[in-house]
Length: 168
Image (cartoon, rainbow, N blue to C red; front, side, top):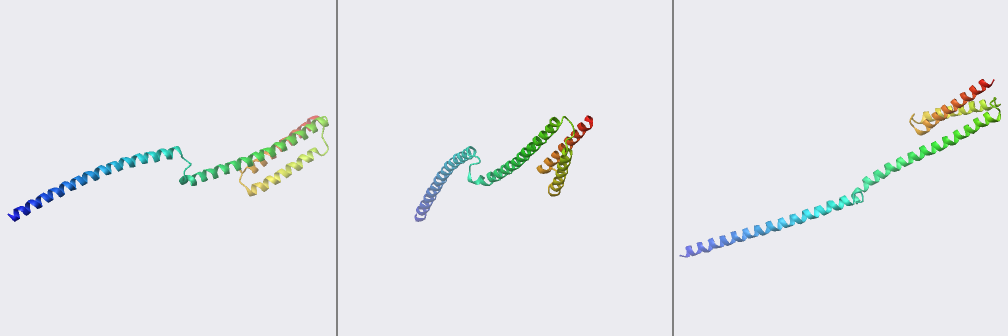
């Protein structure tokens, strides 16, 4: 009888522990499910925040600095090209004024020293171009500008010499 009674207590205790274990498992499962859904909501909020503030976040600082450095380099290059173009414009305007003065002031005849002046300018430009080519590549803005100035001065000289030849 004792053993039967002990056996009943043990069986009842096992059933109670099994039920309690199942209840605990169900409770933990519901807590896990609830935590999982809250985590998904928070992750969605983080994704929305990152999308809204793209480029403003601290972990994107390095990328932003690289982009900024690239843009700064482009700006510097554009400023150099613009300065070169302004210098070229001033130079060409002075050549135009010289040509107009030559053409109008002397009735299309030869001006003493004007061909020599253009020869000297052309020699100077060619020397500067050779020096720039020794330092830079053919695509460098200064080399390109000097080549263009040399060609334009040569054409101007040829035009003046042609005009002189036709007037004599």
